[in-house]
Amino acid sequence: MFGEIFICQFPFTAGTESKIRPALVLFDLQQDAVICRVTSVSRTGTLDVTLHDWKAAGLLKPSVARLDRLVTAEKTIFLRRLGVLGAADLAAVRDT
Image 1: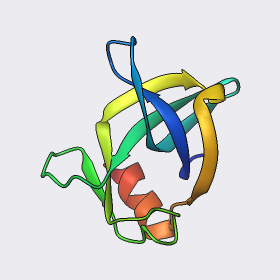
Image 2: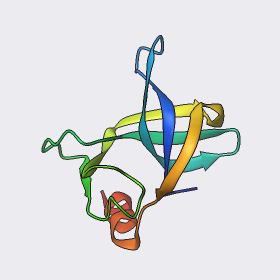
Image 3: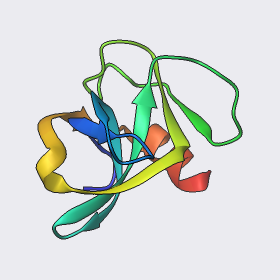
């Protein structure tokens, strides 16, 4: 599952609310997964990874994986699979 992009009910860090948004799977933990936020809002954080092949990953806009926004969540929040990151983007995430 590493590198797959899903539309999901992404929980806010407070845990009380959520927002439907794309998320990148970082670790598959059987019933759960560690995911990070994917956003089209650009900024220059040290843990932001620009996804260069965003169209092939099923995203609608140029996007960034925010590796400082991690959540361990049940896979039941996954609504729809969009796609998977290409090799270069996977390597960039892995190397960050």
